[in-house]
Image (cartoon, rainbow over all chains, first blue to last red):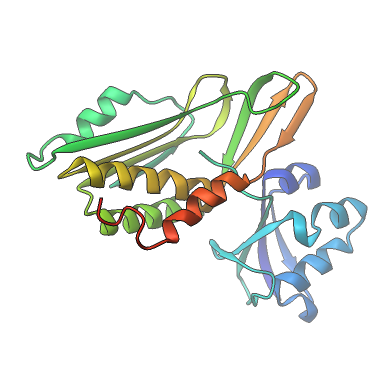
Length: 84
Length: 157
């Protein structure tokens, strides 16, 4: 399943990636599964994408870890927001 | 109703003049301006860096404005949020509201800035002499936002 990934805030800076297209396996069809799959990429990924350290959005709406991901979705992964 | 996200500074007086023009029913106008301040305890902030999520941030702000407009019958709203590198004491954010009466204008303005802090995707990194660090949502901001869930709060403003 192909999805678009975008990164903001701390993970964007530390992982040195702001956007990528990823072909993810079936077990990555929820946000929790996707984060677990991305954490396999290595130490820095495991550290930056710990469930407690990131927030997510699917197609530009905030979404929780159990949310389902579909083909071509735009998934955003970011640190907790801090505007204003 | 309009939202602007930009690197450039804004001029409060001209924004307010535009916001209230052409509507003789406007009886009250309230504006909030957020400034870059020293967040840290030990070091001095040299500057902050702000980024946003193009598309989602505007959508989130428009949703917050729509809710405030409906709840307090606001006549007009202007939100400007700056991004990029900003230095101490610079303006970061403007929220301005117009309404028939001051109660609605005050409440609507406060609601929008409280929700913006916790529901609009912006990320802020502070740069100090000791290095840089990303700031996270503050508990006090979450509490201020949650207080608006109490239905009796200022509904009769």
